[in-house]
Image 1 (cartoon, rainbow, N blue to C red):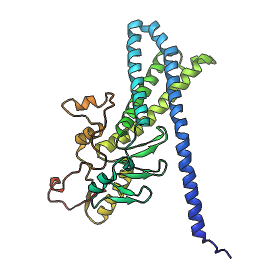
Image 2 (image 1 turned 135 degrees about the vertical axis):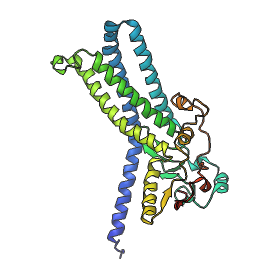
Image 3 (image 1 turned 120 degrees about the vertical axis):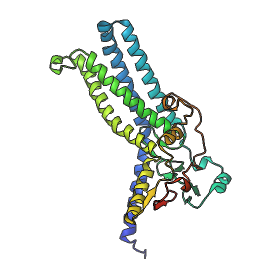
Image 4 (image 1 turned 135 degrees about the horizontal axis):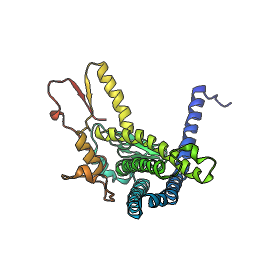
Length: 308
């Protein structure tokens, strides 16, 4: 007679099956979301050239229209450049690193991934969607159909930046140059104004979303964290506070240094060159991450200093 399976085991099995189905769903719908983003951006571009550029020429002349076209093409290029590089660049995984190199680099704060059967460095996490350990993983992005990690995080942040700029610019020029849009009652039942109005609302919505998302990642970069790391760090900081101590993020090198490390920009003009398109390989290996030395911490404070 077959042994009856415990209720807890059945629930756990069902939960694992549901999680596995959701992970597969996220993986398979990723290309759809990438295509949807491209279509919406191109629809915005079409609306801009059909309804806005012609109106700018009529109102302000050809030279002013050329300036608007040049600026919009610059924004469009950078949006697609960073989207494509984030989508098609490997985030960096432990499976791409020679096993001997991982073993020689292992220290006390490394963990072991049973699924990949390899060492898991600090800041690396196993993505259940991609089924691999991603170096310095931030999150799995369905809009990129890819994990965001060590190699492609800068492309992701730049994509957010140019989407923030582009959606703001789009909303402003639609409002100023589409006849009747700034006076909604004047549009009446004119179907020709429906597409510009839709794109104006969409641009405003995307801009507000980008304010939150881009602002969040700017803060993460400046504080030397990732999305997953922030959750871990918050719990460690809470535990330290409960013990009357202060927890210090060992990967917080300072705001400016964190920014340069993330975008690989150096020299006196780093604060400007980070926005420029680049396809150069990310410096570093993703598992030997630069840390703050305990001796560099302010003296006289009882701090909890540990790896992640």
